[in-house]
Image (cartoon, rainbow, N blue to C red):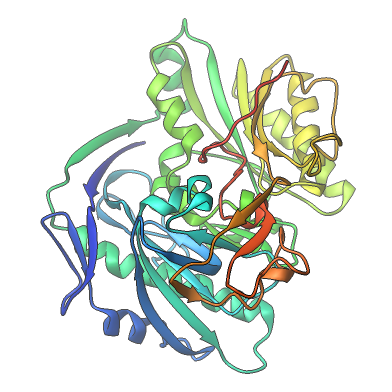
Length: 428
């Protein structure tokens, strides 16, 4: 499977009469996007606002972040099974508006949506403070069930991102990257003397608005499977959950998975990147045992020498992480875990809710319990009404002047457990 990813680098975003890219500037027709979003009768209003790096702007509560992309050639279309028809993707050519994002926000769905600051001390913890953001503030119909609201918000963001992504279809990219993973036997033969490395990608799927979708299928009803890494770049996986903001894997992060990117960089040099094992995170013990058994079996079947494993969320998912680690290790395969930590505000408690002896190589993406202060901003996109009930917030977090005191985990992607963030920890 070979995919060319054409990167169109966006250096500004402005409103315009036509949604287009011209001179590395993204112009957005707000009325067009609002009308598209409001085709869903579950939403009664939608407003497009722009947020740029360095502005005194706070966005909350954030539901999802999506990089606009368009499938230029090859099988299928962007976000298959959700926006496009169900067809295998990950080949041909795709164009990405790099530096631009669609962000959905508005009234809170659950209590685990977060904050993005475009400037100030909190901005340094969030990767989206440096992107040009098309924010869609949505309003649900009165009495709408939370799951219906989540679905409406998810589709609003994906539809808008797909429509905006079309603006890049006929643009000559600033850079074209080529990614290729061959069928298993061919891939192994290509670099027979290099260690065979795979990536175990754990998807949040524990219900309670904790869902992720693979080709439109809720991950909680799927069994572990093998996928080509390039499928992610066409939107085969989309976010549909309201987990803790700090380690929420947004749709952007599935499109731009840093583990996949790094493994491709080293592919053919000091390792042979064989592919991805996709699995879920479960509620019941029997399901955890079943999925982790299958993950270990697939890793063995692929003949892997080593794997990296990432999770989404913390607490209960730590058990899935450790089961995968233990069982894969027992197959004689080396394992490195990537996760974040929650050892309390003083850093003195156990960092993860579960642990096994085999978890002896771990990359930390930071401590989500650290308290930070957010100064007031000149403009709020969305609302701050729910700050004190968000994960990371508490009674008294929101001050009368609009400033906030809260745990770091209230910021979207601040400690995301796949490394697409600005924090790390060093062990001694």
